[in-house]
Length: 106
Ligand code: FES
Image 1: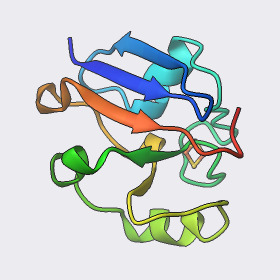
Image 2 (image 1 turned 90 degrees about the vertical axis):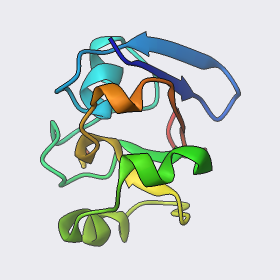
Image 3 (image 1 turned 135 degrees about the vertical axis):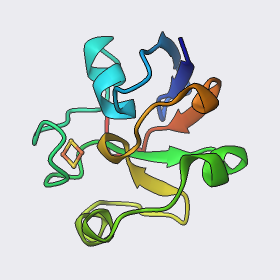
Image 4 (image 1 turned 120 degrees about the vertical axis):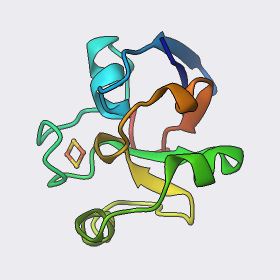
């Protein structure tokens, strides 16, 4: 199972083993990772699942969807590597993925 590491703004890291097919948001919620509220349940409609993808993983993770782009306009502290974690589907190639959580989410 792919391992995903979530690093809170405080620096606390949570390593989660996730089934391929889930989203990065699903895996966080299932494992009680703090800071990913996912208020809309993954419908790309709340931006409370905002994460920063570690630069080394950006290409493997792929680009934002158009809907995600427009939702990120409502998120705080958006950077080049910002993604909505409900829009990142976990595949085996993402084993080792590292994402960081924004300061506004804790
Ligand atoms: Fe709401 Fe991702 S869970 S936008």
